[in-house]
Length: 180
Image: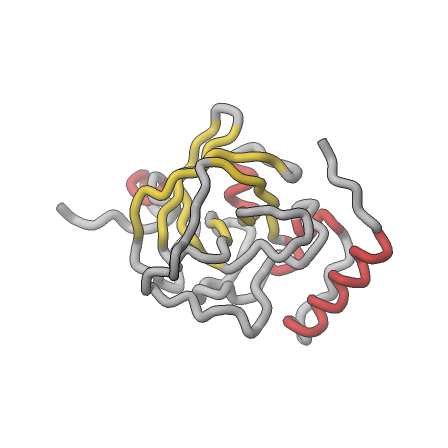
């Protein structure tokens, strides 16, 4: 099911967000750059710092609407300090602390991803914004309903969500597993 969008309004909104938040970044003019969402997906420059403290009354549902973001934001820093590239695997959420590990399921695919950014910032009511790497791993190409579960946390580092270097890191969304 596709959400109806006003293309002119959407394009204008995307251009304003891209210009204000990323003055040096290329303008985002295609909906594909934000995974089909109708608003900017990456956090604006004044987004919360992404501290590891517990959010006030974070409410996480077992399922929610997910968009994805990536191409228009590659090379930019996430709200949690990572540099977004095509290989980064993570998710944006408005309230969960940076480094929170979320198990995401969609049509038989399951992936554990860290919270790397704030968002989504769209007008369709999405709860989650997957990086392009996470969306590809889950075989997601448009706005969809996903199942989610918070399963832990990982230290928020500049490399959190980066392409894994080992099989262990693959299961934690690029976060190195703690030695036990």
